Image (cartoon, rainbow, N blue to C red; front, side, top):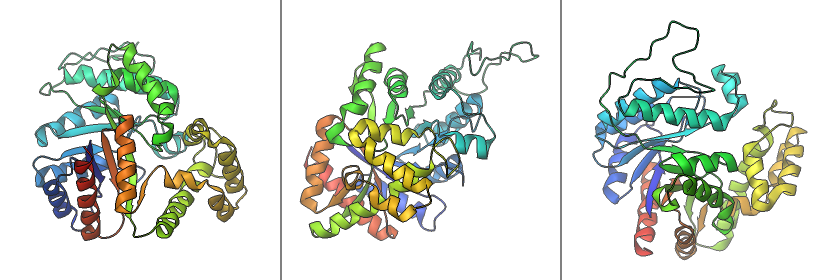
Length: 347
């Protein structure tokens, strides 16, 4: 098991923090991309200041760039970083894709499949011809040409942030790693079962994938303060549950997080939270989020309790704990050092 950490490269002191994180044994640093700064530019900056730590996106939204541009951007970062880049991708949702990027959100699983196929073709240095449903290249009935990429062939590891069973199976079949939002070790098979099925379909085993579990990490001196932290993180899920559907912020719609929470056994509670949020009762919605969603999806507690949780993640097959941290960089580094120590000592 390894430890990764989220980082915001534009924050003052981020480059120094990256160097220190690398020094204490953090294996990977990850940059988010939502509807703010892009992830790739910041990672190029970190690549110039570090030497061995892996550098990943968490995540690039599929459709925000053409698959060919995404492939060549990834290969560029792979060159600049000396082979340390990881391309984390996800389908996002209609509110972001159609509202921010102006791209229709359709057939996310097929979009993921075809994007990975095109990245692999370009990574092999082959002429780009792709008989796809989403991305037929060259475009039919056009003047487009099947071009050979002007890049040095290389493999770019692709990790997929998948939550639904179909996308999980696809991830197991094609990807190098899985980015597992809302993962709970006690309900591991909800996610790992479909991943395993996909891997077996491709003649692979699950241990050929890097299984990444994002977790907020907070050390506390007593259970009461740990419970307060769990409540705070549970409250944070209310927006995700209530406002991330296919409709507007105040209307119901398909929500991939809610689908996953339902499969984890929290369907009735999540439905209540969504109804409260969409009715404008945001405080009530926060209070209605099950405490377990804050407690079991994160590492919150004493040194001993966090060590026990780390062992659970390890036992079910998680290979990377991706730490989400609060506080200034000195506090974040101290937390990371304790987490790396626990992971090393429980190996």
